[in-house]
Length: 127
Image (cartoon, rainbow, N blue to C red; front, side, top):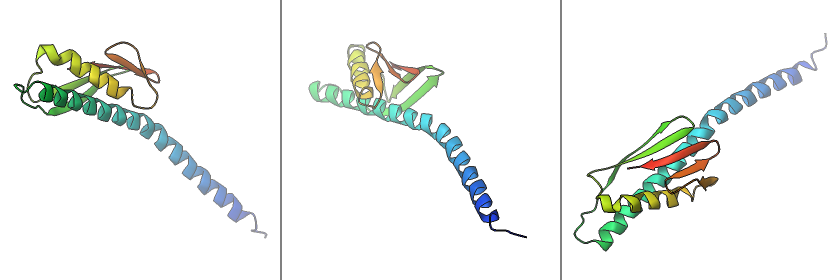
């Protein structure tokens, strides 16, 4: 018997199996990576807005962002939580700075003053 072609066939089977695993993993990891980028940009924008408010208004105490929650399907909502309520006169500033920060993420396009689009998903910022 001649076994010269068996190693090539086994090699092709192993390589194709590894390729399938990599493709399945990347299809799962890609959208999650985008979601992490969106959450990080939202946190950075909200933190920057709160820092600016604390700096310009000395009577306001600094606040921490306590959570970023992204919910929904193709139309998602980014809910930003703070350690205490944001004064109503500063809510628009926080949302605007957050949207500006989201626009720095690669591929993000503005929809309106509170909403951005990345691929087939839209993200609306809420406090």
